[in-house]
Length: 301
Ligand SMILES: C[S@@+](CC[C@H](N)C(=O)[O-])C[C@H]1O[C@@H](n2cnc3c(N)ncnc32)[C@H](O)[C@@H]1O
Image (cartoon, rainbow, N blue to C red; front, side, top):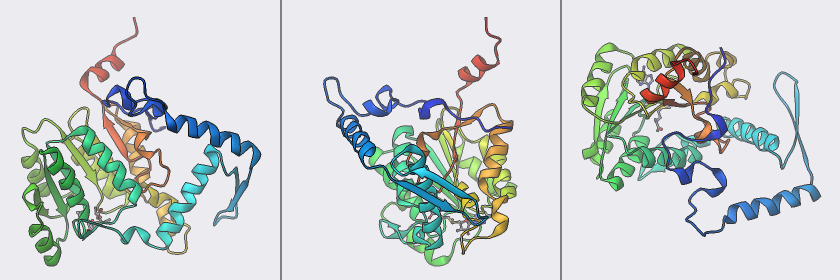
């Protein structure tokens, strides 16, 4: 079944000024300089047309006008492939602790947390803990929220570094497989009574594991919040020199599409994929509020 996608890249639950791309962050009477700059650059595109062409690992050729939406999409895909090949996502840190993310994704996760202001953020797959600290930083600025981090193996030096960090008070660590019922029960205990729960899945990226995580953690996500399944881009990097052919089908994206194809209560929000260069393709799953679901199920009068 086809994945469901929010129309027009709009993000539900966002303040009105944030829904329309060109008027975002504008106060009444302000000029949209981005819009003006865009109009100018579209004029330049007409004069400076350029083509881009790429031959993939199967010998198929893809062509696009570079300064177009198609060109942007193709360049984004190529950027993901080259970045993964060179393992550049392993090079950044947050407040001194490594995090395995693309910088674009760090900014978008910040946008989501700032907007949602969750009571609890759950992350499965914490590695060194840099992403936990990123979420804790935003909660600290907001003055609200705790983070529950789950990993099958929390190495001693990572645990020590997280627990010694100035933001440690906001973080709870749970060691265990994210799909072990005992782990899920521990996470659930931390979420009990919370008005808004955000869940991020960034552990084992096999299709089967992500499918099990989506099932186990979807019920913890409060309506109006998000279940973020990361690393769908694994589907794009099966044919890079460092990739594995089995990733073509065995990846989080396949699990995401299965999940939203079955579940009426979740839909993909493309707003958080608008930068193209993302590891989290189709990964932001918005849990519809109850009223929206009731509206969809009622026959049209
Ligand atoms: C991609 S890294 C996480 C990166 C981290 N979120 C960040 O942004 O820096 C994946 C992590 O998932 C953990 N992992 C693998 N299998 C797991 C499982 N079954 N349950 C929980 N964590 C698991 C690994 O130990 C590893 O630390």
